Image: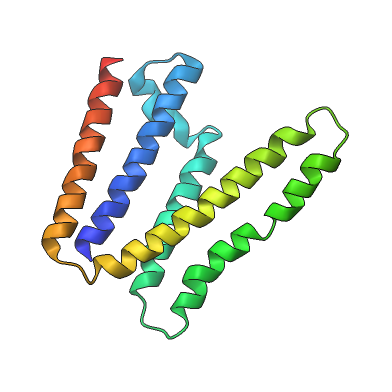
Amino acid sequence: PFYLWLGVILANVGTYLIVTTMEVYNSGTSFVIALFRPITTSYSILIGVSLFVSIIPIWLSGTKFKRRNYFGFGIPVLLLLPIPYFIWHNFNCTGKFCNLLDIFMVYALGLMALIFVIFYLIGIYFRKWNIKVILSLICIEVIVLIGTSIFLMCT
């Protein structure tokens, strides 16, 4: 379980680095200032969603109660329920900026549901796999994060 939670922490660090990169390119500030700005800007919603779709499924996959699969696969289904409304609203709205939010919400809810299921399945199978497989995947994730950090500091 330690390596599983380490992978979740590294995934959230990667999300934070991506948000920092977006902040650097959008505002033109330095990298050091942008490291602390996503906490106070509108990117905090993205960081909160990242924490939700990574921590909750890993926690659910480790619980011992009987209906954990109903929650593990039920929450993504609940995230997919509003998508037909957004698709319908996309074709029936007559305002100037109607279609922008609708298309974004369809993609965002679909990706949130998919990432939630992926993290839930990772939580289940990482507890059963050999430790060498888990360590190799975490090493790959660390190498990607270090490469991203070096790229950000060079730019």
